[in-house]
Image 1 (tube, rainbow, N blue to C red):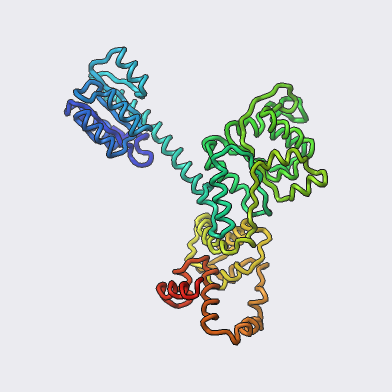
Image 2: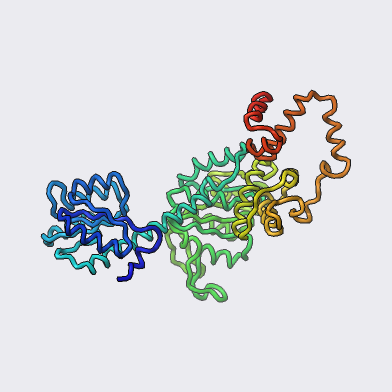
Length: 462
């Protein structure tokens, strides 16, 4: 007989079979093992309960009537120790009352002896599908946590550590948040991190760029529409309804037209939306996170943004640092983006030269982290020798004066007359800056052992 397709998806599903009839337990386990399940047998309820304390099982197939510890006790134990497990009851003493009680207590299915093995496999396959869905959801959440959790916010600089600490306090609440920062500083990534670490993480995160749409289209996107509301209008939900129970991220909110600002304010106050062209209101439960690269206080002073809406949006305000304010994070970001873009393009990158790192550290990043990411992406694409170097940098990266002809002498001139110990400390500090604090890499660049470097760092109080 062919193996169950359900059982072949991912690692085998772990099944615990509990039956005080050893021969019957073996028959069940053999039938399921032939379908690709990983089965463990317990021949008493007590043994089964002890196994559940020590190991993880995704499906439990248990006899109902057993001495001392019966199936209902096993079901209760599973709900405590293995809350996501599917429990299937098997009994030769089936009554309507016992079946109803088992199902009421959380059993996923109830089978009668003599057991139909085909029916058993079908029931276990259905339970396995539910477990595979849980696995897929857990993996999705793990990836979202990795990408959009606080771990996804790269940086050891004081401004970033302060930001992450503030986010940890903000995320679990339902407060409205306004994120301010230059273009490319990662405002949407921060909004995703807030959502992913909030009680709303299992509901929708919906983003909308307010600067990219005209007034009428923006209102249709936000609130939905009914047929005839405007040209080509159709019956559709807006972002508010779609985000119900979750988070709505309004990017570039400072560019929202004033008439739309008035309607948004009304929604924030009433928690009700009205589709464009309709008179019926719809209740919504949405957390609002907005972002802008404009100075909204200036916009309020100029009459371009409503003051009452501004104060409603900035219950909590976050100011994201520019890359110029967190240059010590550049090496970490470079390594992070190198791994991401190398994997995306299917290329192997072994390292980046010190000269290239210095050039990146010295650059004025007007486009902030997004510009840095795009630069590393470009370097990975054009690289041919698995080492990112100056020749891989985009053409606009001309060397700063400190690296152009004659500047080296100028730089050395500033060191003339200084004690050698001071010069050594200066070079160690600069090397640590280039490596983003990576002492192993810094020691390699300086040509000294790590223990020597540690001693020098302590000696120079670096």
